[in-house]
Image (tube, rainbow, N blue to C red; front, side, top):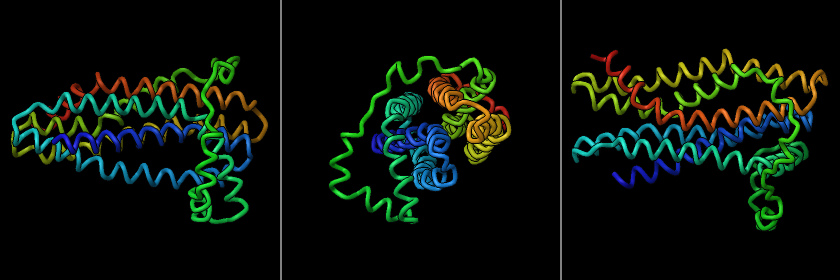
Length: 263
Protein backbone atom coordinates (compact mmCIF):
# COMPACT_ATOMS: atom_id res chain seq x y z
CA UNK A 1 0.00 0.00 0.00
CA UNK A 2 2.71 2.47 1.02
CA UNK A 3 4.65 1.73 -2.17
CA UNK A 4 1.59 2.69 -4.22
CA UNK A 5 1.20 5.91 -2.24
CA UNK A 6 4.79 7.02 -2.82
CA UNK A 7 4.53 6.25 -6.53
CA UNK A 8 1.30 8.27 -6.65
CA UNK A 9 3.08 11.16 -4.95
CA UNK A 10 5.72 11.23 -7.69
CA UNK A 11 3.23 10.90 -10.56
CA UNK A 12 0.89 13.52 -9.13
CA UNK A 13 3.76 15.96 -8.61
CA UNK A 14 4.89 15.50 -12.24
CA UNK A 15 1.35 15.89 -13.61
CA UNK A 16 0.64 19.17 -11.84
CA UNK A 17 4.14 20.55 -12.39
CA UNK A 18 3.81 20.09 -16.15
CA UNK A 19 0.17 21.26 -16.23
CA UNK A 20 1.29 24.47 -14.53
CA UNK A 21 4.10 24.97 -17.05
CA UNK A 22 1.50 24.60 -19.83
CA UNK A 23 0.02 28.02 -18.97
CA UNK A 24 3.39 29.72 -19.39
CA UNK A 25 3.89 28.43 -22.94
CA UNK A 26 1.54 31.23 -24.02
CA UNK A 27 4.11 33.76 -22.84
CA UNK A 28 6.90 32.28 -24.95
CA UNK A 29 4.56 31.97 -27.95
CA UNK A 30 3.62 35.67 -27.82
CA UNK A 31 7.10 36.93 -27.02
CA UNK A 32 8.89 34.85 -29.68
CA UNK A 33 6.00 34.97 -32.22
CA UNK A 34 6.53 31.22 -32.67
CA UNK A 35 3.22 29.76 -31.51
CA UNK A 36 3.39 26.58 -33.60
CA UNK A 37 6.97 25.71 -32.61
CA UNK A 38 6.23 26.41 -28.94
CA UNK A 39 3.20 24.13 -29.03
CA UNK A 40 5.09 21.39 -30.86
CA UNK A 41 7.92 21.37 -28.34
CA UNK A 42 5.60 21.46 -25.34
CA UNK A 43 3.80 18.39 -26.68
CA UNK A 44 6.90 16.47 -25.55
CA UNK A 45 6.24 17.53 -21.97
CA UNK A 46 2.55 16.80 -22.43
CA UNK A 47 3.41 13.21 -23.38
CA UNK A 48 5.21 12.84 -20.03
CA UNK A 49 2.16 14.20 -18.23
CA UNK A 50 -0.16 11.94 -20.25
CA UNK A 51 1.93 8.89 -19.35
CA UNK A 52 1.79 9.86 -15.69
CA UNK A 53 -2.00 10.22 -15.96
CA UNK A 54 -2.25 6.76 -17.51
CA UNK A 55 -0.29 5.21 -14.64
CA UNK A 56 -2.08 7.17 -11.93
CA UNK A 57 -5.54 5.55 -12.24
CA UNK A 58 -4.47 1.90 -11.79
CA UNK A 59 -2.26 2.90 -8.85
CA UNK A 60 -5.23 4.58 -7.17
CA UNK A 61 -7.23 1.44 -7.91
CA UNK A 62 -4.49 -0.61 -6.27
CA UNK A 63 -4.58 1.69 -3.25
CA UNK A 64 -8.32 1.06 -2.92
CA UNK A 65 -7.80 -2.72 -3.24
CA UNK A 66 -5.23 -2.60 -0.45
CA UNK A 67 -7.62 -0.56 1.69
CA UNK A 68 -10.33 -3.18 1.25
CA UNK A 69 -8.06 -6.17 1.89
CA UNK A 70 -6.36 -4.58 4.91
CA UNK A 71 -9.54 -2.92 6.26
CA UNK A 72 -7.91 0.51 6.46
CA UNK A 73 -9.28 3.94 5.63
CA UNK A 74 -7.60 5.27 2.45
CA UNK A 75 -8.90 8.81 2.97
CA UNK A 76 -5.74 10.19 4.68
CA UNK A 77 -3.61 8.88 1.78
CA UNK A 78 -5.97 10.43 -0.76
CA UNK A 79 -5.82 13.79 0.99
CA UNK A 80 -2.02 13.61 1.02
CA UNK A 81 -2.07 12.98 -2.73
CA UNK A 82 -4.18 16.11 -3.18
CA UNK A 83 -1.67 18.09 -1.10
CA UNK A 84 1.08 16.81 -3.40
CA UNK A 85 -0.94 18.19 -6.33
CA UNK A 86 -0.93 21.57 -4.60
CA UNK A 87 2.81 21.32 -3.95
CA UNK A 88 3.45 20.33 -7.58
CA UNK A 89 1.48 23.37 -8.75
CA UNK A 90 3.36 25.63 -6.35
CA UNK A 91 6.72 24.40 -7.61
CA UNK A 92 5.45 24.85 -11.17
CA UNK A 93 4.73 28.50 -10.40
CA UNK A 94 8.09 29.04 -8.68
CA UNK A 95 10.01 27.36 -11.52
CA UNK A 96 8.10 29.08 -14.35
CA UNK A 97 10.71 31.82 -14.98
CA UNK A 98 13.43 29.14 -15.18
CA UNK A 99 11.26 26.95 -17.39
CA UNK A 100 10.56 29.83 -19.78
CA UNK A 101 14.25 30.62 -20.06
CA UNK A 102 15.12 27.01 -20.90
CA UNK A 103 12.04 26.56 -23.09
CA UNK A 104 12.76 29.63 -25.23
CA UNK A 105 16.29 28.36 -25.90
CA UNK A 106 14.88 24.94 -26.79
CA UNK A 107 12.42 26.52 -29.26
CA UNK A 108 15.29 28.32 -31.00
CA UNK A 109 17.22 25.04 -31.11
CA UNK A 110 14.18 23.29 -32.61
CA UNK A 111 13.91 25.98 -35.29
CA UNK A 112 17.53 25.35 -36.30
CA UNK A 113 17.58 21.55 -36.10
CA UNK A 114 13.99 20.83 -37.11
CA UNK A 115 14.01 17.73 -34.92
CA UNK A 116 12.60 17.23 -31.42
CA UNK A 117 14.91 14.23 -30.71
CA UNK A 118 17.92 16.41 -31.59
CA UNK A 119 16.77 19.05 -29.12
CA UNK A 120 16.35 16.41 -26.41
CA UNK A 121 19.78 14.86 -27.06
CA UNK A 122 21.41 18.27 -27.02
CA UNK A 123 19.71 19.15 -23.72
CA UNK A 124 21.04 15.94 -22.15
CA UNK A 125 24.67 16.75 -22.95
CA UNK A 126 26.75 17.19 -19.82
CA UNK A 127 27.80 20.74 -20.64
CA UNK A 128 24.17 21.85 -20.97
CA UNK A 129 23.11 20.08 -17.78
CA UNK A 130 26.06 21.72 -15.99
CA UNK A 131 24.96 25.16 -17.25
CA UNK A 132 21.39 24.62 -16.09
CA UNK A 133 22.06 26.08 -12.64
CA UNK A 134 23.04 29.34 -14.33
CA UNK A 135 19.55 29.64 -15.82
CA UNK A 136 17.67 29.27 -12.53
CA UNK A 137 15.52 32.36 -12.01
CA UNK A 138 13.22 32.79 -9.04
CA UNK A 139 9.97 34.80 -9.23
CA UNK A 140 10.01 38.33 -7.88
CA UNK A 141 7.47 41.07 -7.20
CA UNK A 142 8.94 43.00 -10.11
CA UNK A 143 7.67 40.31 -12.51
CA UNK A 144 4.04 40.86 -11.55
CA UNK A 145 4.07 44.48 -10.42
CA UNK A 146 1.78 46.69 -12.45
CA UNK A 147 0.20 43.89 -14.49
CA UNK A 148 -3.36 44.69 -15.69
CA UNK A 149 -5.17 41.99 -13.71
CA UNK A 150 -8.46 43.91 -13.94
CA UNK A 151 -8.54 43.32 -17.70
CA UNK A 152 -8.80 39.55 -17.17
CA UNK A 153 -12.40 38.28 -16.64
CA UNK A 154 -12.81 37.22 -13.01
CA UNK A 155 -15.37 34.54 -13.94
CA UNK A 156 -12.72 32.91 -16.14
CA UNK A 157 -10.37 32.59 -13.18
CA UNK A 158 -13.08 31.34 -10.80
CA UNK A 159 -14.18 28.71 -13.31
CA UNK A 160 -10.58 27.58 -13.82
CA UNK A 161 -10.19 27.06 -10.06
CA UNK A 162 -13.37 24.96 -9.95
CA UNK A 163 -12.45 22.88 -12.99
CA UNK A 164 -8.96 22.29 -11.59
CA UNK A 165 -10.46 21.15 -8.29
CA UNK A 166 -12.75 18.64 -10.00
CA UNK A 167 -9.96 17.46 -12.31
CA UNK A 168 -7.62 16.96 -9.35
CA UNK A 169 -9.97 14.66 -7.43
CA UNK A 170 -11.98 13.03 -10.25
CA UNK A 171 -10.26 9.64 -10.17
CA UNK A 172 -9.84 9.61 -6.39
CA UNK A 173 -13.49 10.47 -5.71
CA UNK A 174 -14.67 7.75 -8.11
CA UNK A 175 -12.50 5.06 -6.54
CA UNK A 176 -13.36 6.20 -3.02
CA UNK A 177 -17.06 6.03 -3.95
CA UNK A 178 -16.46 2.41 -4.99
CA UNK A 179 -15.73 1.64 -1.33
CA UNK A 180 -19.03 3.19 -0.24
CA UNK A 181 -21.37 1.31 -2.58
CA UNK A 182 -22.45 -2.31 -2.61
CA UNK A 183 -19.98 -4.74 -4.19
CA UNK A 184 -22.09 -5.16 -7.35
CA UNK A 185 -21.89 -1.39 -8.04
CA UNK A 186 -18.14 -0.92 -7.50
CA UNK A 187 -17.14 -1.17 -11.15
CA UNK A 188 -19.77 1.38 -12.13
CA UNK A 189 -18.63 3.79 -9.43
CA UNK A 190 -14.94 3.52 -10.32
CA UNK A 191 -15.73 3.94 -14.02
CA UNK A 192 -17.32 7.31 -13.20
CA UNK A 193 -13.80 8.78 -13.05
CA UNK A 194 -13.74 9.03 -16.84
CA UNK A 195 -17.06 10.88 -16.87
CA UNK A 196 -15.92 13.38 -14.23
CA UNK A 197 -12.62 14.14 -15.98
CA UNK A 198 -14.36 14.35 -19.36
CA UNK A 199 -16.87 16.86 -17.94
CA UNK A 200 -14.03 18.96 -16.48
CA UNK A 201 -12.18 18.89 -19.82
CA UNK A 202 -15.32 19.86 -21.75
CA UNK A 203 -15.94 22.86 -19.48
CA UNK A 204 -12.29 23.88 -19.87
CA UNK A 205 -12.42 23.60 -23.67
CA UNK A 206 -15.77 25.39 -24.00
CA UNK A 207 -15.42 28.24 -21.53
CA UNK A 208 -11.81 28.69 -20.37
CA UNK A 209 -9.49 27.86 -23.26
CA UNK A 210 -11.37 29.88 -25.94
CA UNK A 211 -11.30 33.11 -23.89
CA UNK A 212 -7.67 32.53 -22.96
CA UNK A 213 -6.82 31.88 -26.62
CA UNK A 214 -8.59 35.07 -27.72
CA UNK A 215 -6.46 37.15 -25.34
CA UNK A 216 -3.31 35.33 -26.54
CA UNK A 217 -4.16 35.75 -30.24
CA UNK A 218 -4.97 39.44 -29.78
CA UNK A 219 -1.54 39.91 -28.20
CA UNK A 220 0.09 37.96 -31.06
CA UNK A 221 -1.59 40.32 -33.55
CA UNK A 222 -0.50 43.37 -31.57
CA UNK A 223 -4.06 44.31 -30.58
CA UNK A 224 -3.32 43.77 -26.87
CA UNK A 225 -0.15 44.38 -24.86
CA UNK A 226 2.07 41.47 -23.84
CA UNK A 227 1.36 42.38 -20.21
CA UNK A 228 -2.25 41.21 -20.65
CA UNK A 229 -1.02 37.69 -21.41
CA UNK A 230 1.32 37.81 -18.41
CA UNK A 231 -1.60 38.83 -16.20
CA UNK A 232 -3.70 36.04 -17.69
CA UNK A 233 -1.01 33.41 -17.03
CA UNK A 234 -0.37 34.59 -13.47
CA UNK A 235 -4.09 34.48 -12.67
CA UNK A 236 -4.64 31.09 -14.29
CA UNK A 237 -1.72 29.64 -12.34
CA UNK A 238 -3.02 31.15 -9.12
CA UNK A 239 -6.47 29.73 -9.85
CA UNK A 240 -4.93 26.31 -10.44
CA UNK A 241 -3.15 26.49 -7.09
CA UNK A 242 -6.43 27.41 -5.37
CA UNK A 243 -8.24 24.70 -7.34
CA UNK A 244 -5.95 21.91 -6.15
CA UNK A 245 -6.47 23.04 -2.56
CA UNK A 246 -10.22 23.18 -3.26
CA UNK A 247 -9.96 19.49 -4.14
CA UNK A 248 -9.66 18.75 -0.40
CA UNK A 249 -13.20 20.03 0.06
CA UNK A 250 -14.59 18.49 -3.16
CA UNK A 251 -13.26 14.96 -2.60
CA UNK A 252 -16.04 13.65 -0.35
CA UNK A 253 -19.05 15.52 -1.86
CA UNK A 254 -18.17 14.34 -5.37
CA UNK A 255 -17.75 10.79 -4.05
CA UNK A 256 -21.21 10.93 -2.48
CA UNK A 257 -22.73 12.19 -5.74
CA UNK A 258 -21.23 9.14 -7.48
CA UNK A 259 -22.58 6.90 -4.71
CA UNK A 260 -26.10 8.28 -5.18
CA UNK A 261 -25.91 7.72 -8.93
CA UNK A 262 -24.76 4.12 -8.49
CA UNK A 263 -27.24 3.00 -5.81
